[in-house]
Image (cartoon, one colour):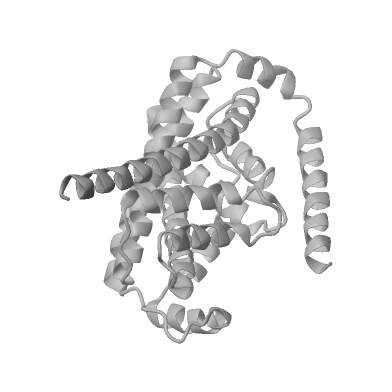
Length: 312
């Protein structure tokens, strides 16, 4: 009953939020709607390709974390687990993102649930800190004022950085993951954490290029110099989506944050069109990459079976 009540409250809060956002942009839709209908297929294709490249690179970060914690998995396995967890965010309840990844890894024989959850938390934390750094570093070069909550973002980045310190994280992991049987979670050495952080600093600008092409697809003309800012805006949207636990996949919340930030480099109609297109694009790409990972893994199994039969 509690779970059903929580899900019901989530859906009500989401409906109220989406309705409020729709009301707020009601005057912009007459401009954004036609832009979406006339989206440039070439620019849109480039955006989807770059977005897919972002996800394909992003998975390597999680594999790096897993390897440091003693778990090595094939790329196709990590890709499937990552994309499944991304799509699971749309299910109300708030627990399906890590649960989906843990279940996916169990299918491939990896059953160390505490370490898997710890790796997911480390991935989220390091990626978030990198996103905040990219966003803050891009502001002085943007050339226009941005109505961004810089103070809260800095505070959030500092807090997460402190929590990610090996000693603090190991202590918290033991406390939080005790119900899953965690006696001790292998810490992520600080030097390795900094290396992975630097890796994520590179991934967010790739996401910025995807948003750059989405803006062009709906008739915008962003400058190439705005790519780091757009990557940071995407990062802020992702962070807000995670923190807004009442909204499945941050639906509406992510869009509201990104729309407000993109206004610094685009008109209202272009910003709204690109924001809506971004939600559609990430969902389509996540689903296609999940399918690609499954096909790649199945092909690997078939190759092994054929090799075994030929050796008999």
